[in-house]
Amino acid sequence: MVSATRERRILWVTLLLLTTLPGFAQLLGEPYLVSLFSRILIYGLAAASLDLMLGYGGMVSFGHAAFFGIGAYVVAILAFHSAEGSAVPLLGLAGTESALLAWPAAALAAGLAAALIGAVCLRTGGIQFIMITLAFAQMLFYLFVSLSAYGGEDGLSMWDRSRLAGLDLGDDTVFYYVCLTLLVAFLVLARRLVNARFGMVIQGARQNEARMQALGFPIYRYKLVCFALAGTGAGLAGALIANQTEFVSPGLMHWTRSGQILVMVILGGMGTLFGPVLGAAALLLMEEVLSMYTEYWMVYLGPMLILVVLFARRGVYGWLVGGDRD
Amino acid sequence: MPVAVYTDGWWAATVTEPLLKVEGLNKRFGAVVASRNLSLDILQGETHALIGPNGAGKSTALAQLAGALRPDAGRIEFAGRDITVLPGHRRARLGLARSFQVTSIFDAFSVEDNVALAAQAHDGHSFRFWLPARRDRRLRRQARSLLARLGLLPQAEVCAGTLAHGEKRQLEVAMALAGRPRLLMLDEPMAGMGSGGTLRMTRLIRELKREVTILLVEHDMDAVFALADRVSVLVYGECIATGTPEQIRRDPLVRRAYLGQG
Image 1 (cartoon, rainbow over the protein chains, first blue to last red):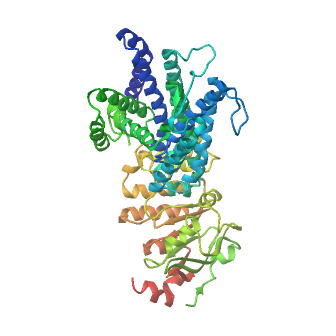
Image 2 (cartoon, each protein chain N blue to C red):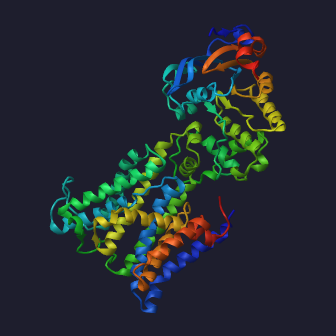
Image 3 (cartoon, helix red, strand yellow):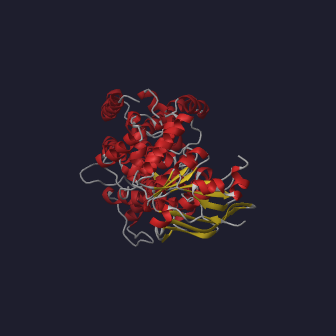
């Protein structure tokens, strides 16, 4: 068993570092760090949402970027119609640039898509599940490639970031703190959820599905809700990434993006929620640093990943916290 | 093959309707017939043993009763209700509990978590996202009282995967007992146990049979004849005889098909 105090200490130290980061960035004269870390927080949110279904529910999805992309596109499309002054097709509503409307809409749309896709995918298991989630994500990828009204392959630029009453999201530091707040809120909610009755069912299903059925749990339902909640989290992360880059493209939901999020979860430590955030940080920082020296930075990433999988089953997080909790 | 069904005995006088009624169950996997016209009555309150040589289709029969397998033909009735096509989780909620032949527990959970999760299955839906389940007094109290009963309380905090084999088998029974089942189906509870473990498990089942109807699939003949009120013999997926242990021991068909060889 891991000492809970050490776990808590790491959490608080990380939170302290993240809260003071913009200040440090200013002191160092590297304002770029703020936007880099916004990216890390956003991908951390996406990875943590995947961990909810992967690490706790044992559902290995290779299509999580689909929901990330949907969230991003919802924000961009709503902004596009708002700027154009036209109605959103199919819905017939006006577009919006308000974060309070667009972001929840993004999360909800992604969650709904996850519920529909999950309803099909969860009829399968094991390798088939991995393949079918991948297939659905690629279908969505090509769907958005073919949507020429929204830029097709070239993607869609946003005029500006979403508007949030009283806050200037265009300011990188303000945006950073909004990302941090949402990530912390998601982690707190997810933490409650995995330790609540629902979480016990999800974890039981990961360990022994036949036993769960025999005990009287209709596990399909629980796994589906877990899948949809994970999609919702990814959709929120997508809404944030659209704002961060002020640009969306089908690349956001390409299978390599799903792979990247998956790597973050594994690298950071499955079934820890907070670990995948560290995984996102490790991966994006490694990319940042290594790509300064060589274009072939992935050559270094590959072996590192293999070492993590072989020797640190709970990833960066497990290595930090110490002990082996299983 | 002619079927011998002995109907005399104490249960015939005391009980009218069977708790579980199986009629003409058929199940085949390709050319292999796992259940052939299997009919079986489990009476309220009895301990009914299902025996038969390896490959006689005992576990397949149990899987169909539990709802893990869908029979090709036939009818299963539980407490007067047709459950033939009811999914396994619904049957469990009706009070049909089972243990598995190959130990089936949640290895990463503590022993107490295992039983508490079993209790949770019978305590309404689990779409509860906020309160910590491990601090749920009602579930924990149930879990601890079951563990105390099975002598596993000292190991409550231990990770279930690290238990000794015999203790895992006991944990299985504890999980099956959560939610107060009406019918307890035990699939070879003594499998892989030493003589000490077998003795302990026999003692436990003898205690349980006073309060719950039991369907016992078991290889250990000493245990079967010590525990069962009635015995059904399965050969090639077919029930060739049902009766008291004494009757089964004396039945010439059974002797030829099964006991004589063993």
